[in-house]
Each structure stands twice: as structure tokens, then as C-alpha cells.
Amino acid sequence: MKLTTISDISRKMNISTRTLRYYEQIGLIESIKKEDYAYRTYDEDAVKRLQQILILRKLRIPLKQIGLILQSENTAAIIEAFQQNLNEVDDEITALSTIRDIINKFVTRLKESIHQEIKLNLLDDTALLEAVDALTVQKILLKEEKTAADLEQANEKLNKLTDRDVRIVYLPPATVAAYQYEGDEPEHAVATVIDKFVIDIDLPNVKPDMRHYGFNCPNPVDETNAHGYQMWVTIPEDMDVPAPLVKKQFPGGLYAAHMIPMGAFEEWGWLSKWCDNNEKYEYNGTGSGDNMFSCLEEHLNYRNNVALIKNGVYDGVQLDLLIPVKEKG
Image (cartoon, rainbow, N blue to C red; front, side, top):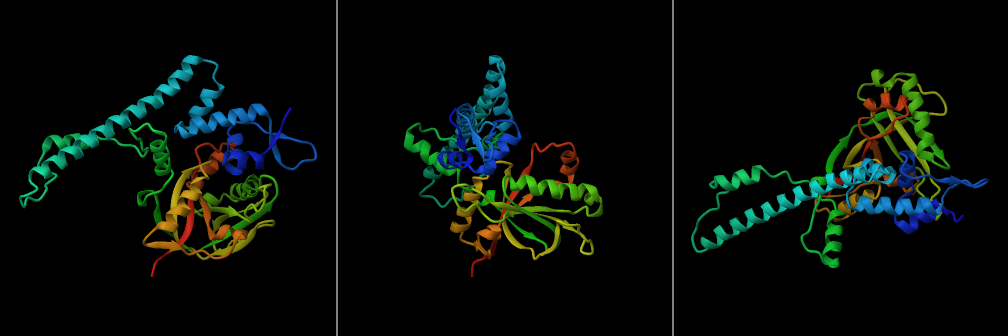
């Protein structure tokens, strides 16, 4: 039986090891641990299954539905899952066609009055306003053209953040309880320690505004993707923390924030490109790969998820990807 390492899968399929681990955590794929080998490996069946998952993800099929599609032996259930997504695509096509027709009408009206000094009033056509009000356009961008070049261009646009996708937020200074681990599955290792600390002292009630951050520490540096992870949870300033946790001070600051569902870590690259090309803000981090270049990941709504964590439930987690920024000039 041919086995492929997690680093090989990550490199060949352009998918992060964290995403692979998350897919395994929610039951989409399974890995094999070889004796006396620290890293995960995948057999041929797992590789084929992962290839199918990536195809469905590119078609914007949600992970829950992917699990149903791949696990179900009921053809009718699979058809129903695809049909649900097909209906959403049809709605999007209808909305975009309506938008195109409305814009064409605006252009036609402007052309008719091009030699007159008439100011366009978007509110003087009741029929058009009713059509606009009926639109429910989703974020997914669809292209009507079918050529390979057009599809590639559409894919590039899908994988590019706009100003509407990024928030500029201020993270306040805070005292945090921190824990770091280097080795296999460091995210899981640190989460186990932090979650136990939070639950044992009932931190959600002690600090209702508790926040939860994490970052690679250090970043992967070679083909093995071996790395560490450090996790923080904010605590009252006068609280003592038990070993192996360490008490630290987070200075806070201005960050560019982009929300993702757990597993979509490829969007780190999208946010980085947004910062590189933004006209108003620029990167303002310090440090190196040892602290993920001052970038953070915030587990959103962690306070309410603590109750789920007690029962071993991690489904539906959302993260903010955070890059430190400052205004140019």
C-alpha cells in the first residue's frame, strides 16, 4: 500500500497541513500513523477522497454537504445536495442577469441624453427600483463566458479580497494566559491546555469579554511542515496562571481583519495580497517567522463555544485572520 506524507500532500495539492488536519478532525478524511514516524500519512483511497473534496470546494460546496455527498450511498440524497447548490447558482445567475439589464438601461438613458445637461437620477424609475430591491446577490462571482481563460480570470477574482471583505479593527491591549507547543498537531495540543484552563476556572463568567488568539510559533520552515503554535486567552490583569501557562502582555494595535470558516487558511495569502496592494494601509508587523510576523488568528465567539468544547464539538468555528497595519504616510 502506497502512503503519502502530509507534507507531500500539502505541497502537491497546494493545501495547508492545518486544513488537512481540520478535514480529518471533522471526519472527511482519515490518516495513518506509521510506527516510529511522527507525521501523518495518507493511503491511495484517502488521496482520491481528498482530490474529490478539493473539486467540490472549488464548486463552493459547503463542507457539511461534501461529507453527505461522499458518505452517502443513496443517489437521491446526493442529487438533492447538488440540486440545493444548483438552485443557489441559478438564483445568482438570475440576479446577475437582472443587474446587467438594469445597467444597460442606465447606459441607454445616458446615451439618449448625452448632448443634454441632464443629471442622472437613479430614483426616478419605479420599475427599476423594484427590480433592484428584489436582488439578493451572494458574494460568489460567476462569469457567463465559458473559455478556459475567462474561467481562470474568474477564479483569480474569486481568490482576491476587496475592501468590502476586509475590516480595519483595533485590538485593545490585554493581559493574556499563553501556552506554546512544538511538535505534531501543535494547534490541538495548545487548545487542549487552554480549553482546560478556561473551563476549570470558568473564565467566561470571570471575564465576559474574553478573547482568544493564536499564531504559528514558529512557522513551518522546511518540507516536513513541522511547526509550533502559541495560543492566548485574555484574563483579568491581576489573575495568576498555573504552569505550563505563562502570563504575558499583549500591546494591541490596528489590524486588517478577514473572517474565514475553520479550514480556509489559503485565504491568508489573499489577505496578505490585499495589504500589499492597498492604497491606504500597509503592513506594520515586527518580528519574524518565530511569531508569524506579528499576525494573529482570533477564534470568534470563543466564549459561547466553550460549552460546545466541553462536549468535544468544534463544528462551525469562525476565525478572524489578523495582519498588523498602519495608515500610509
